[in-house]
Length: 276
Image (tube, rainbow, N blue to C red; front, side, top):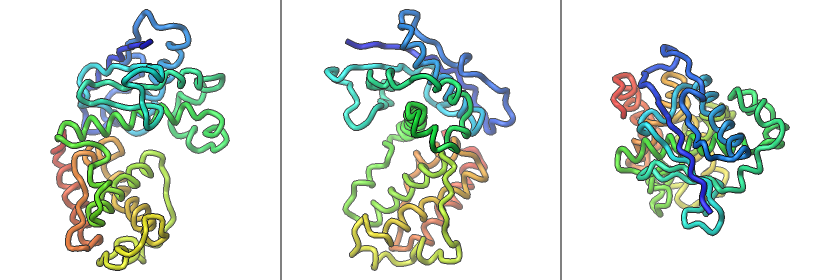
């Protein structure tokens, strides 16, 4: 059994959300009249979270076209998400949720879904109401994959599975930088030790596993330091759109020089609004 519910997303293009009019989720979302009461409740939360992201961080899904279809599918369906509670197909503009997630939207979710940051600042509520974070993850995933698809790419970029450390680590740094930025995570690190976070020679890391502390510092702290300055200047949705369309390549084993080059190129593109 499959439930198809089209969500109409009408998003005005804007270089800065702060300069445009505030829009509600109700103005952007249309729900199939045949949806059940429980399904309507789930999609009401989706609408709230889309609006909460818009109001807190800026508009997402600007390039997705005028309609995204939300599917709720059971485990026997061919399109059932196998690797998580939701999956997005940019070719068909379809965001698919496991049907079981509808039951996760229980009492108390609605009141915490209206604003973006309060939910993430309360660890007890995050543990009690995981459905909100699940929906956010699906919306951000859609934003990233839509942007990557328009450039003939996928998100995460394919180099994340490469055996070449230069390719793999660069891709992983972007993924962790993105993850930290949209949850306002600020990892503690000493920027005076940039030589450790952005090493100028990957030779030492070649002999370490991906679970090694030194490797993880470059992967996670280095990724955060790569993306967060851009976020501070240009905002989360625009930077994530750029990142999805622009892989980070480590050249000559030099993370430091490559990171500075990536940031410089990103600033030029974002300042000129040369992304789509």
